Length: 381
Ligand SMILES: *Cc1c(COP(=O)(O)O)cnc(C)c1O
Image (tube, rainbow, N blue to C red; front, side, top):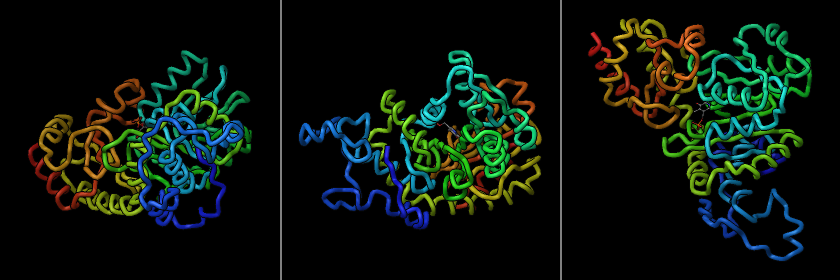
C-alpha cells in the first residue's frame, strides 16, 4: 500500500507516468532497481514497534520498494489516495469485493469480464451474497434495484465485449443519494486513467487488470485496486496483507517500466483502432462494428458464422489469442473464450454470439493490420 495525499496529482498524466519510480531510490538510481529480498532488517526495536506501513519495510507480503512505487504511481494516475498492486486482475476483483458481508447485495452491470460472474456466483454460494444485474440503460431502474442491503454497485465501462458506455458520474450521484455508504466500483481496464478517471467522477474504488493496458506488453499478470477513502483503505489493507495476493518485485518493476509509456501507447492504440474501424465499417463481410470512439478495443460481427472460423485460421499479423491491451494485436471470440462461462441465455441477450469477434488493436502499423484482416476476410469467401 502507499498513501499519497499529494499535490502531485496536479501534474499531467504524461508527467506522472514518465516519472514513475524516479526519485524513489535512496541511492538516486533513476530507474528503480529490483528488490528481490523477501524481508528487511529492523534498524532498532523501537522502529520495529513503531513500524509505519506507508514508509517502512519488514516483509515483502506487506510491501516492497518496487510494489510501492507502482502503487504510488497508480494512485496518482487515478486521482486516488492509496493503491494496492495485486497478482492478477481477478485478485483485484477479489480484494475489491472483500468488504462484503453475508447477506449483502451486489448489483452489477450485465456485461462484464466473464470471470467476474464466476466469482460473483462463488460469493453467492459460499458467502450468501445476493446478486442482481442492471442493463446500463436507465438510472431510475438501477435506483429501483437498490435496497438497504445493497453494499456495492459494480461497473465496467466501456463494457466487455459489447462496448456499452456508462455515465459514471450519473450512477455515482444517484447511488450515493440513495445511500452514501454504497460503494461504486469501476473496472477501468479498457480506458485506463488516460481516458477515464472514475474516482474523480464520484466512484469509490477503481480496479484494473494490469495484465492489459497498464502493463501493455503481454508479459505479466497483475491487478490493482485504487481508493480515495481512508476507512476503505484500511479495510483493504488488512485483507491484502493477510491473504497475500500481492504483486512481486519483478512484475512490479516491469509494470512500473510499462506505465512510463502509458499515455503514448493509449494515443497510438486509439489511432490504430480508428483506422481499423474505418476499414471494418465498409468491409462486405462485416455486419456491425462496436467501437466507443477511443481506446484500442473493437468488437465486430461477421455476417456468417462459418466466416469466423476461416478468419481466425487465416490471420497472420494479428494473433488469435485471449487477452488484450498489449503491443501485439490479438483477436478472440468471446462466445467460446472469455465469456464461455456466462449462461447461454445471458450471452444471447447481450448479443455475445458465435459471430462476434473482439479485436485488441496493437501498436503495429495500422496499414499492416488492415491488410492482414483484408486477406483473412478474403479467405472467408
Ligand atoms: C482480463 C480482465 C480481468 C481479469 O484480469 P486477469 O489479470 O486476467 O486476472 C478483469 N477485468 C477486465 C475488464 C479484464 O479485461
